[in-house]
Image 1 (cartoon, rainbow, N blue to C red):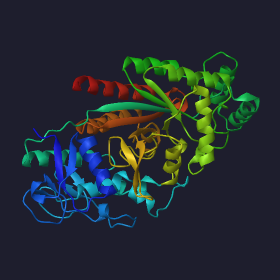
Image 2: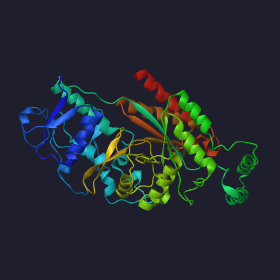
Image 3: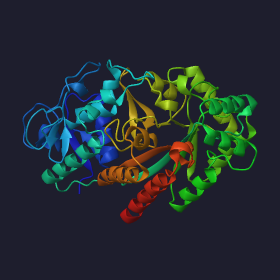
Image 4: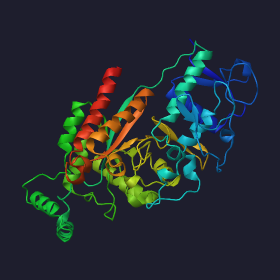
Length: 438
């Protein structure tokens, strides 16, 4: 059995090595090495005609600049779709260049019309335009590559990934009413009264008078359900100064600090920073908020997700990389379920601006709580079916399924009434898949 792929690639550079590392080493579990002889190669990645398996290269990986590329559609390729068609035969598409385009978020470096929060909108993505956002294309291409290589070279040996599930929970407001102080609650009373929100007014009075629990503070329920299904959880804590979009409890609040410390002590939990709304291009602001969490936990912080998914390419990632973040969780959309980077697996961030790979690993989420509720207008039963269907697609490629929820969406209050079962059935289904795959 051979445990290494030989590749003939006469123009091999940093982009080639990055995408070969991702597809061969990380997705397919096999080493590779370059060879100077095309006849000795398992894969001929060049324009040179020779016997064996050839993938005619697109120019993208040999370039060192960023330019507009003419991609307006994806074509059928068996049971998947692809782009950058370069020839015929077993590998008629340059899947390496196509994968590089998607995972580096190449299109987000180009000009686009930003949304109301100055973010790259899903509607500008080729994956949404071609209605393949819900397909883990890069994983699918890797599997087709493995099958093709094995058809030519049966002695090759692969150790691909297995299905994984990770829950991530953003803590934007730890409490709905408690610990917000006299001024904020007084304004809340007036707002509820003015808008005729009598139910909210009653709930606020009941919580503040100690008659009922604050529905946002549901961490005991979370712990019970996570332990029941043996679920790994990453919590992201908002510690920014108060503002229009940043409304968490002050970072010096004793009860808030205790919660963060308690969450970090649970074995299956890890705690990261949730940089505030205006932090995406503000290095000093992120540094300040990161230091607050370091102080609370007396530990280095290596995980992060941007609040409101605020993100500018490449500034946001560059700042986080400099601050020692090694695991970043912003890669996804609130408006669409699926795979913003076309992949259901972690991958290192490649900075196109400096044309280099970094040590920061991007963790793409594919399902956010607000998406089926607000953007898809689904009821809980419909949302459960949709999330299971998406999870089956991830299982089919032995990928990583990351969900994004909030303690608010687990509150069983307001618009989130009856949505706890959506979350629990999602993680129960992930547990079932893991259990039956072992």
